[in-house]
Length: 292
Image 1: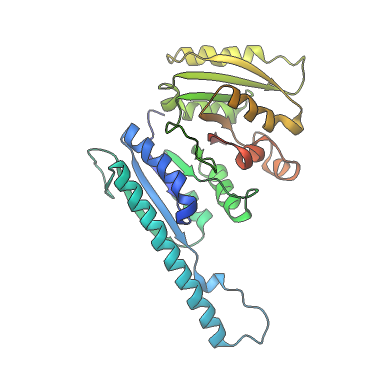
Image 2: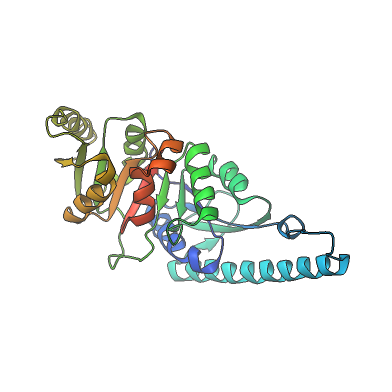
């Protein structure tokens, strides 16, 4: 991938949309990209629960009216956050190419968020998500997983608490296990890897005697053909603590971006037993670029 020219940012509300908007606008300025901010409203007629036979038509209409009012307010606040981000970064509003510099558009649609994000994500170079919140809230995780599993595109996850550094990708750590997903993540991260000040390959193993130096060294050689110098480091941890140890090593490298494959084991297994991907999504204190 030569550059991130088209960036999709799902904005469910103003609060969760602030961090991904900031990251997307910075990347747009860096790569002269176009940012599509997508706000999806749930159809209130399908969102209102109809329980019991005692609910009158007037009560249903009232509930739908309240849901519509809340949706309108949420959309208005999200649009205000988008406009403010464009103004801060000097990004012009534009919906069609060509553009002489970084540009952005606001898209407001009604439907199922996971379906619309997946469809639009397939025609984007990068998706930028905010942290799913709490211990990975169900609705947010559903959309994030849909984007990871069905778009075939890289996803940049922003941390819940924004780091003090304004850069994303000046110091990159790569979680490397030799999987196809990890390889795809490295390929997608190339625009950032080429400009990084430092790149560290974190080669994970669950056993002390497991041979991991050669694969990590081979990745370093591959990157050197692209003019990227990378150091290697072995991460040894049990399966239960692999995610935590990976994040600890990334912090030790002072990384501001972690590049990794997502769900290199089955998603069902990771959702039931935990897994590195789910741990990183829920706890990463830095930006994470993921690919499935």
